[in-house]
Image (cartoon, rainbow, N blue to C red; front, side):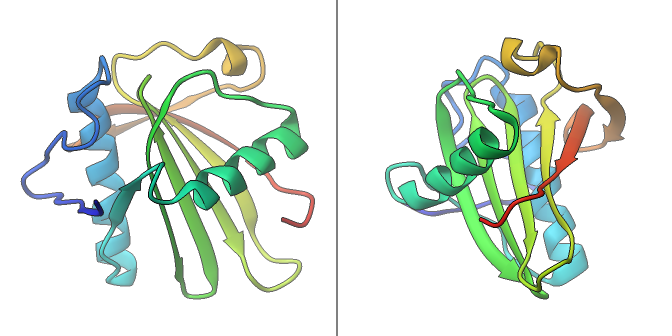
Length: 154
């Protein structure tokens, strides 16, 4: 069942099995606030079972671009388009969030963003590959993030 993310009253709905559920909920709410403030977009997530194509698209990009396979269980996904950008997110049980920003116009911005919830360790499959910068968030505490540019067509 789709869940409209509330960034005023942060909830762990859909994320309860995560050992860092509160921090992951804060991270998800932080993303929802950003898209509401910048694009007036309401951030709605679904279970992986409701939107398997979103998870498949992100998984394919990770595998083909960087040979990355995430070990953690995916809990929720969302996919939408704003101002010519196709955006997709997956939130994992470990507290990891991965997003794809894929500008529809050829030759434009295309990247994968990786964010770690406060309190989680860097997953083994990412520890040797990325350096993570820290960012403070009122909703999510300390977020550690990294990214890479997508080179291929997806």
